[in-house]
Length: 118
Image 1 (cartoon, rainbow, N blue to C red):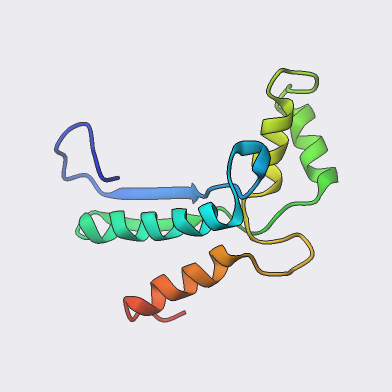
Image 2 (cartoon, one colour):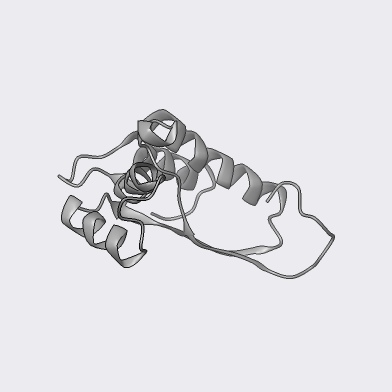
């Protein structure tokens, strides 16, 4: 959101906004939390345009669901299957077992810093 290709006054809506925490994707829980801050920083920069930011998932999905999505997207046996699995399986703000990742607290902190009710 920080470098739009053209000047437009159209509203910005981010649907399924997220960043995986999987090391397979060269990421981490810390990087995922940093992404949350970057989204809010971009929102602040363009505060008149964003109308909605919908974070991807509260929880990581279970491996059975990831397995099915790999099949559904036709990526079984593909060169990028492991990265796709890592991406889909680690988008949640909390782990599949319900334990929170740092990204969820970062989301709370960013909301509170703007005095937005959570």
